[in-house]
Image (cartoon, rainbow, N blue to C red; front, side, top):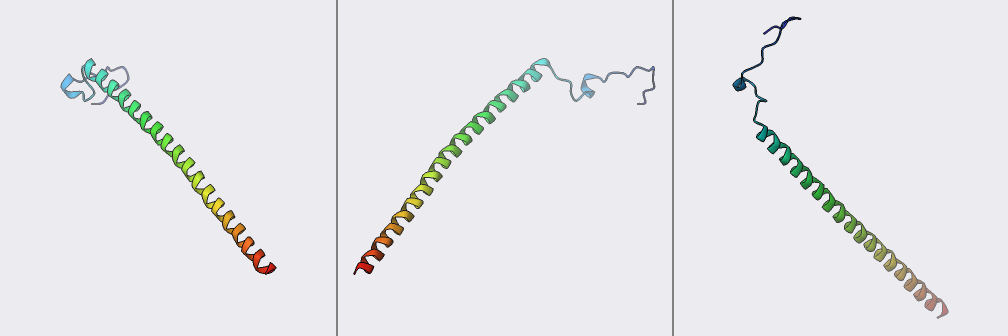
Amino acid sequence: MLVFPGEAKSSPVRDEDPDAGSGTEQIGDERGGVEDALVIVQNEQQATLAYGRLKVGDERFIARIARRGRERRRAQRDRDARLTRG
């Protein structure tokens, strides 16, 4: 249908309008959207907490490796010092 300036466009019949719906359908969709958004926020918060725990675990792991390296170097220096004293 062509619409020229000054002509009114006829509105579609309910069966022809894909966006037509009752008010309760639209409210239900909005409520579902809010619930979905809350689930997404909760999931993101849980992921953030898990990442924080993982990061703390990683830091502890790295510190443990560094400590073992220092202990091995110290033990090697002690062995070398005993061998040179003889």
